Each structure stands twice: as structure tokens, then as C-alpha cells.
Image (cartoon, rainbow, N blue to C red; front, top):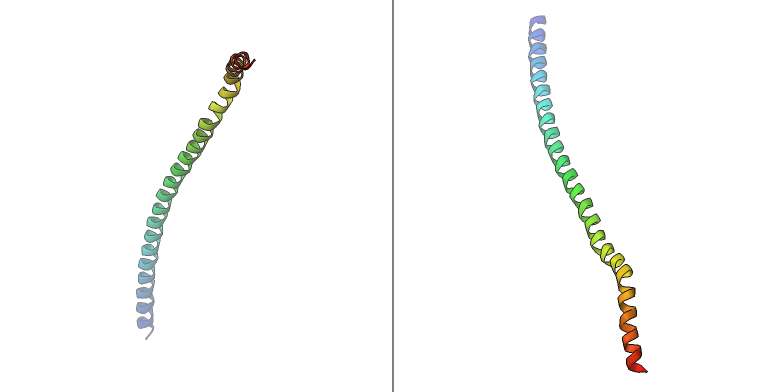
Length: 86
């Protein structure tokens, strides 16, 4: 009778080890998938940050250039219209 118990325990230990190793492999596979997805997300977020900065610059640079260069041009235009109105 003790031999049967010993055999059963050895069998259960070997199956437990197999199940454990299979679970570990599955865990490693899923961890690799998660790592790949997180790398892709990191790239996507970096591109989104670059695009948002680019959009802001596309809006701000023309405004700043307009404030710098337009007042002298508008002075000349208004002076020519002043002479026409008087």
C-alpha cells in the first residue's frame, strides 16, 4: 500500500511540474506580447507628442511673424488711405 501512495505522489509531482512549466511558458509568451504592445504604444505616444508640438508651432509661428512684420506694412497702407480720404 505505501508503494501505491509513493507512485501516486511521484505521478502527481511530475504532472504538477509539467503543468507548472506549461504555465510558466504561457506566462513568458504573454509577457512577450505585452512587451511588444507596450513598445508599440510608446512609439505611438512619442509620435503623438511630436505631432502636437508641430501643430502648435504651425499655429504660433505665423502669428508671431504676423505681429512682427504686419504693423509696418499696415502703417503704410493706412497712410495711403488717409491721403485718399482727406
